[in-house]
Image 1 (tube, helix red, strand yellow):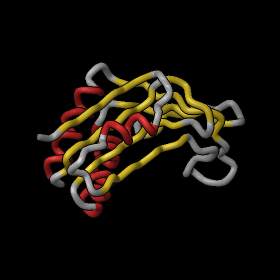
Image 2: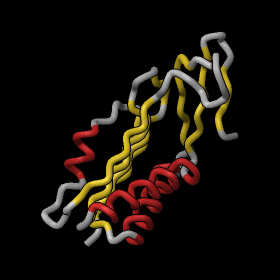
Image 3: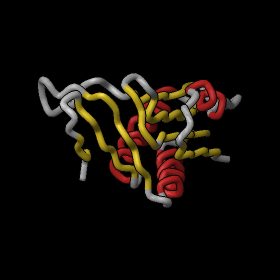
Image 4: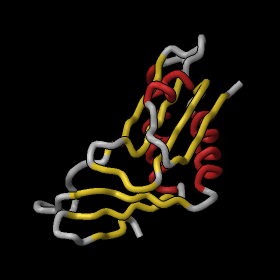
Length: 141
């Protein structure tokens, strides 16, 4: 039976907790993605990021749970978990963690990649970033 876990939180994410959440005797491989706040933006040189702030719609956790279940089922995963931070995060902090346990590594890794891609595009979580020059901007709006 498939087990899933999703959480949108203002607390720090413990990667070890998600690894434990996907532990199961039938798991032969775990796909893990840890998204960190980086110090630059893809917009180009000179765009030094000071912090990010994530905001979530009240339905974000429910949407994430639905996506986790869909992806896990598509890849025959045994367990899958994801957590996303909200609030202000500094450079180097963990923003999102996705872990998928499956019988084989290929399924675990492919499911992990699909899961983070779908969370980034489908879960109603928005990102505002602040730069060294004091300018802030919303990403993806």
